Image (tube, rainbow, N blue to C red; front, side, top):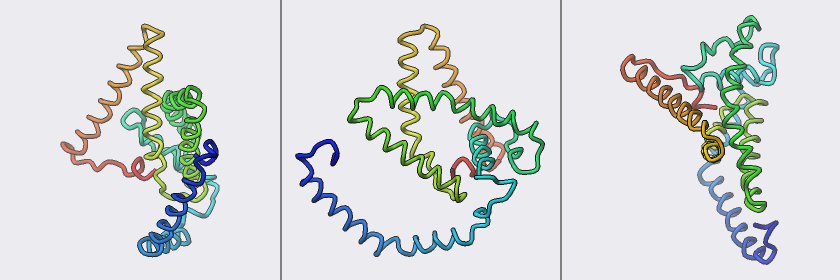
Length: 206
C-alpha cells in the first residue's frame, strides 16, 4: 500500500506507527521470555554444527518432505548420513516428483495475478522462503510449510480448473489427486486409531 498508493501514505503511516508501538509492547510484556528461550535453544542446538553428513541441512529437509508423502514413499530414514547413495537417489526422485504439481500451481498464481496483487503473492512466497532459509541454515523448526499451504492449495485448484477447461482428460489427473489424498489421509487415520501407531512429527515441525 505504501509503494502503490501515495495518497494513502499519511493514513498508513499513522496505522503503521500504532502497529510498531503495539508490537514493541507485546515483545516487552509477553514475548521477552520466549525470545530469551529461543536464543538459548539456538546456542545449545547440536544441529547448528555443520558436518559432512549434514551439508546445509539438505538431507534432513528432503527426509522431512519424504515423510510428508507417506505412505507413497518408502522408508525416509535412508536420507540420514552414511547410507549408500544408490538407495537415497530414488527417494529424492520420488520426493521432488511429488512437489512438482503444487509448485506448478504456485507458478500459475504468480504469473496470472494482477500486477498490484502480485506483490502480495510474492511477499507471501518470500516470507516462506525466508523461513525455509532459516531451516536450511540453522536446522530450526520454523514450520514455514503451514504458512505456504494456502497458496499451494489455491494454486493447485486454479491450475486443475484451467486444465479441465482446456483438456478433457484433465479430470483424470484431478480425481487421481483427490484419490491419493484420501488414501493417504485414511491410511494415516487407520494406523493411528486402529494400529495405535504414532505418526511422525517431522511433517508437523517443518
